[in-house]
Image (cartoon, rainbow, N blue to C red):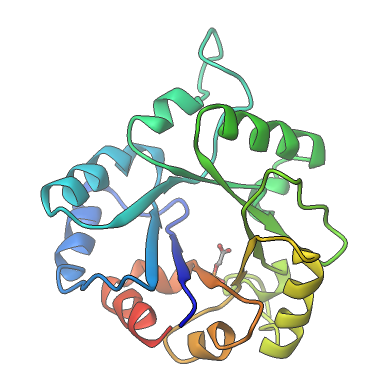
Length: 219
Ligand code: PGA
């Protein structure tokens, strides 16, 4: 059985009260050695999630949704790799929603480099098979922006097409390619059963802890 990575991207959602409720609803979570779960809450919630995972002794990863391309220093409003490393091991880089705020390929490359410097694992988003996946990246998400559930008229990628794009992106390397875009408990298996897909990244459906538990179970 192949190992899967199942990532929840909560985006700019949840207050600390809502996060506590989410964790309460997630308390039936049962670890599965073949399914690694990574939760990516907002910066403000990383400490809360980190404490819960430690207190419950859970094998769940934590990721930030962004990282400063700069080190520690006089950069008001930036959150740097050392600060993230206090609580998390992963960082999402190059999501299409961030690319909309002007994050271009060179910024993405800098962010990949600095995450590795801080010993964080970058999870890099790519939108098609022409995107370059830098050598040092070990986890990438193939996520066409048009497949994101909150885009107007989302078009979910077909699992077969996602698989062939994942194969091209891998380019015979040892790299995990996840699929992202409108994943839920009903369609998750269609993607994870594909040979070249090593997991999924879930946005909107992960906000409901019970649905996210179902996604993990069905994957
Ligand atoms: P979605 O979002 O699962 O709601 O489509 C995925 C993402 O954009 O990260």
